[in-house]
Length: 330
Image (cartoon, rainbow, N blue to C red):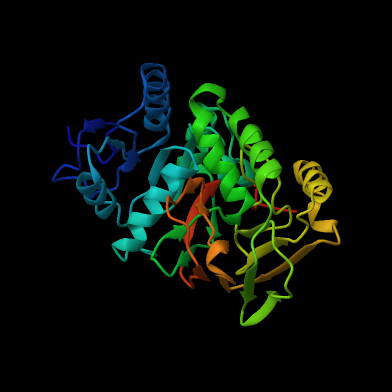
């Protein structure tokens, strides 16, 4: 007998199938997940299936081409990302590259990364099954999205200076130390970095060009990095602004005190820290030797650069969060 009730089906594919442009929730899984993570993914998929009236389509793209095709099939659909900030960055980068901003449905996150800072800041549960329920049935909140002059998007936080060096050092030991690698990287960078002479402009106004070297420049939509360090405790991803933090203190004592205050979110109260916000930011090295690394959503570029600019897009994206949560708050 015919029925109008939706069918609960889960389809696992290596790439998007011909019928993927439908109402099913699109679940993007990581093809490099280990066996222990695969078990979590299976449990999460069952949870998503039980919460999704139209069913789910789980896609594990094998390469960039398949990933782009999967994202293209997400127009008008809810998308659930299984992974950390890097996985979410990959999704929004593909959405931006394919000019799909505003066309892809709400995005849910099941945090399976190391730091999961965007999920933490947005109040999304770190328990995968609890996060799965929020991913398909949570409240919708609009989020900002930065893009730089190379076309790379920023979903959470981008750094220049010591914070980028710290992440680069953390990458050397992340496989061994896990989340603790961020602390090791920050310690090593803090002991060895002597600062960079940078000119920092926010909405056309120079806020760091007085000859002092800078220790760190951070542009933040989210509030934390490295698994919960409150790098921009007052940042909000839905206020139409990017928070800019510039740390000027580069003496050995200043670096130590800054690091201690940073762990507790008190660094923005320091006299050697400039805090502002805006929509367009330009960072320029004053000399060739001041070329700087850039760390975007936890990924550090190999090549140092002499100049980089960012602007906040008018068109952002929508994230699923727990009911009653408004995302990052100070």
